[in-house]
Length: 263
Image 1 (tube, rainbow, N blue to C red):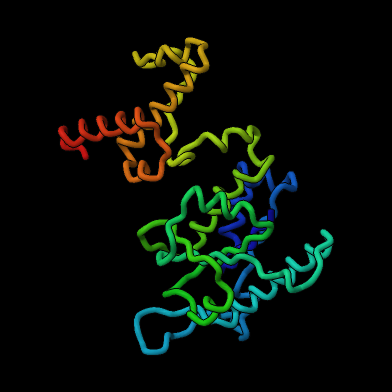
Image 2: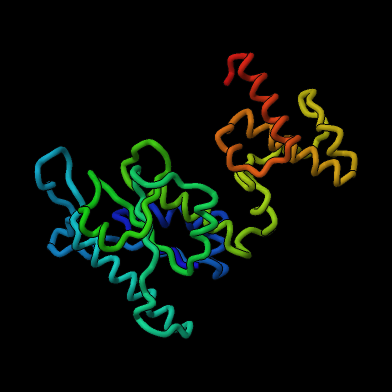
């Protein structure tokens, strides 16, 4: 999979993603991460890409043309790569472009799974007071938010998305199965996990995990996922596929929390 990140700070992207799991995946040829500097496509000698917004207001706005020219350059790079892979015509080159914005849909695991299906994914990082609306209308396919707060730029959310999506690419994780059984799978939080020693600070590993009875262990883990979700993210339960027994368990947990004033 190829990630193309449109940014004013490519060094930030490179420093953050060329390490750990994503860095290893790049070295192994499983991922390509291209941080493309929007300033390289500015049309003035000072490489400035911002200007005052029409109508007044605080701050500066990223101009449309440098962003558009960066997008064209990325499309050309994708076209070259696809030709090497035997792709047909230039008309196929219309990459998915994600604009990182607090106005977008909140990023979720399901969204990561959807984005992981792409061969090429373009991430657009805004700065200042945003980007000229006209170029957004021209090139952006998805508006995605990292959460209901405002950051100075889109680089951190872009890296977050690359990390989340990369983990779903076959071979990126040493144990591919681990990507299937983590938080937010089936809209439930992950169950608690334990390692050696068996007793730590007087706290015992739950005996069922030492039983060797795999069916009982899986049943316990599922129950713990339901309990955790009911405690910490009850909003997810509406999307979860629960049995009647699990629904009753979640209801009791929430009733107990309500009685204790914790819900």
